[in-house]
Image (cartoon, rainbow, N blue to C red):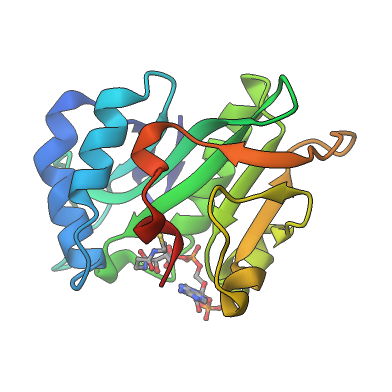
Length: 187
Ligand SMILES: CC(C)(COP(=O)(O)OP(=O)(O)OC[C@H]1O[C@@H](n2cnc3c(N)ncnc32)[C@H](O)[C@@H]1OP(=O)(O)O)[C@@H](O)C(=O)NCCC(=O)NCCS
């Protein structure tokens, strides 16, 4: 468990469901990721799902409630041709009034530390290199995503090694079924 500006980061609990949906509606006003989140939570037992709760609320007052102001999801995935797992990061969301305060970076660092403790040494993400590059992610060439990406998305496929001496894996990513929809891998 870690804290940033009185905001606690902890594993998600069943009672966070409504608050998590509110967070995603605010952070992604034009995209409905809640069905994907529900499916992943229901179907993937070893999912690492972290929420940030507490700190100041939208009006600046101290928020003693358990309202989610941040969330990051890490899905353990197989890599075809190896017996090791990696984690797929995403989605990640921070409440608009708490963005640019380091919460997204803290969620990613906390998740990475927990994954490392559980023996996972590499995290992959499909996202903006301008953001993830600052957090140690580099373009990924060895592990292929489950669907071919559009050419202008190639730089968005990135990974970070969680230990200095970790050997990068090669092969095709085999995520659980909830991730196997081509629309999740295309603009
Ligand atoms: C992307 C997101 C999770 C980042 O969380 P955050 O807590 O705001 O990020 P941090 O405070 O750790 O880092 C902020 C820095 O990253 C930059 N940044 C934030 N989002 C960015 C993005 N999408 N692209 C590039 N840079 C970004 C900011 O410019 C900021 O740097 P600066 O303040 O020096 O300019 C958050 O902005 C968010 O929820 N956005 C809407 C949902 C989304 O796009 N999620 C990612 C795809 S799943």
